[in-house]
Length: 103
Image (cartoon, rainbow, N blue to C red; front, side, top):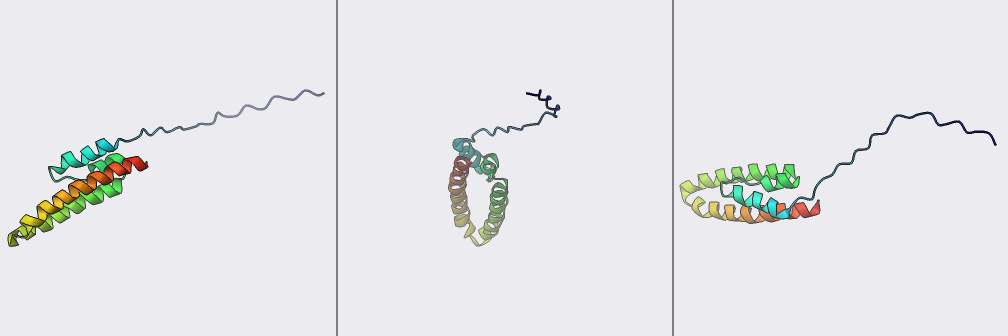
């Protein structure tokens, strides 16, 4: 049996193993609620990895707040602004927590 020549040396292959730790839904909800008291929403979505959703919620809420501010001059804004704030507080924190579970 003839001798098998050794294989030529090859360049080492680079293997990338990216580790993405599991995001906490509770932290995402807190990052929505705590800044939400200062009229800033969307940070929990940014934490969860949904950057586009977080920015849409952030700038969308500010646009909605501006409209409600203008409605305050006809007194209906005093009713709609707190309702929008409470709805955004609840919906954005729940969706941010659920976004962590799906990743």
